Amino acid sequence: MFQNLFDDVKRMNKRQFLYQVLSFGMIVSSALMIWKGLMVVTGSESPIVVVLSGSMEPAFHRGDLLFLTNYKEEPVRVGEIVVFKVEGRDIPIVHRVLKLHEKVNGTVKFLTKGDNNSVDDRGLYAPGQLWLTKKDVVGRARGFLPYVGMVTIYMNEYPKFKVSEKQNT
Amino acid sequence: MHSVLTRGNAILAYTLSVLAALTFCCFISTVFIDYRAKATMNTVKVVVKNVPDYSASREKNDLGFLTFDLQTDLTHLFNWNVKQLFLYLTAEYSTPTNKLNQVVLWDKIILRGENAVLDFKNMNTKYYFWDDGNGLKGNPNVTLTLSWNIIPNAGLLPSIFAFGQHVFRFPSEYTTSRV
Image (cartoon, rainbow over the protein chains, first blue to last red):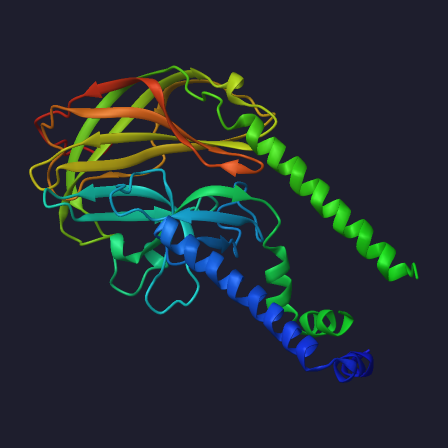
């Protein structure tokens, strides 16, 4: 299969080859533009996330897709599903806000809990951390699409699957 | 020309686009539905204590205890694009330290097909009613509201407040007996 591919490339003249390279570049750059554009529109550093754990079941299962927004002027309120980062953990967590205290000067601290967990998230936070604040929040869940993120989970868990997929195409 | 692979590819691509179109129709058919409903709630017993919060700062904080009644019928909220309702009962109040406090006291998951007619009498709260400080004793204006977060099969995740709320006050003396 690879041999065929290189034969094709050899048969092309310079212009055809350049055209192939350019159209490949177009695909990559438009994907990047869409992602960065979504970041601007939603205000969130990662506007689409894949649910990786079962802590919000039966609402969200592993492999479901969430669309996030993170507008500064929209206040965080109890009952919202927030995606937040915790120091020392590289994977963001998707949980629901359980308690919230807002001071007069606007500083907010809140506590989260997964729907499927029996206790709140204090055990998941960094040692000594009791509350989350606005700077920990990556986004608030606004939209939901089931199953679609399963592809990325499979790719991450079985790198062989990723390789074989590449060879097939 | 038409190998198994190309046929398989065509079938897969067609299936995926049909599924995507159907999912979008499912989403668009329920976007504009009004999911509000009535709920009545009431508090039965309200008590406040002042005890150390070992789950947080270990300082003495106000801890409220209450039992509540709740009646509502949410059956009509369910349609083909509502997988689950997440109900939560929130206490909202303000104190000298914080201008806004929201504490979820109780929540419940109702999946489609389950009983959505609720009639609770003298229910205990599911979560502790800790204040961030000592703002519960004698607090004259604590509002109980019921809200629900709609989890669709595919689509938006709206949070809706129920019509109807209940305002109560905490007693102006701490209870020292066991509750």
